[in-house]
Image (cartoon, rainbow over all chains, first blue to last red; front, top):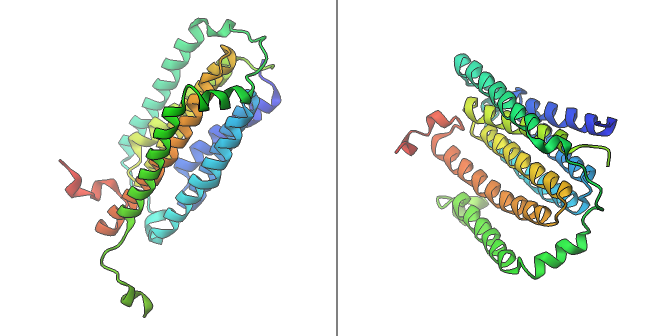
Length: 170
Length: 101
């Protein structure tokens, strides 16, 4: 059975996931997205994967959430509080959400994974490091190249060519 | 280890459903990016849960790669939103008219 820590983290995660989409101010929305990502990191800790949990905290909570927060601050104020959505589309979306939850939920409950038990010790993170540097080392290099190209692409996209240095000084 | 696999998988299904709801309903570009983040996190949670219960270390490796790729995706996505905001002075995706095929 689920213990209290699991229930608390799941309520926090799902509640703040709903809040980040539904709260009126987008700044509070991005802060509750941060709480959702931290909650997923808590799940990783419960799953005996501390390395992935720390990676999640440092990448998601530390950098992505801060990046989103700064982008939200760059957008004009009245757009942040302005909610534009069709009520009919909204009800259809809620219906779709419930259908997906019930559909996939019944399939999963009906499948055999309920009886799955674990008695093996958790995976040591030394094994992950060994995997990274031996079998997955080409993938690691490709991932580094992807990250570098993403940074260069983001800088190129967000650069303004109409502002020159002379204009910036006045 | 008192928790069962099915509980983690159900939480991940709930996150996925909320993310799909956000993608279907919201017209604000930044909120759609929030929804994409939730879907990616649901997938990561699922992968790590299965890797704990099988047990196998490769699920955690895949989750680490996935988190790093998601970081790159968010950086490029936010840059695209900033460029579109500069062009149209709005972040409503219905206003991005010239992006229609």
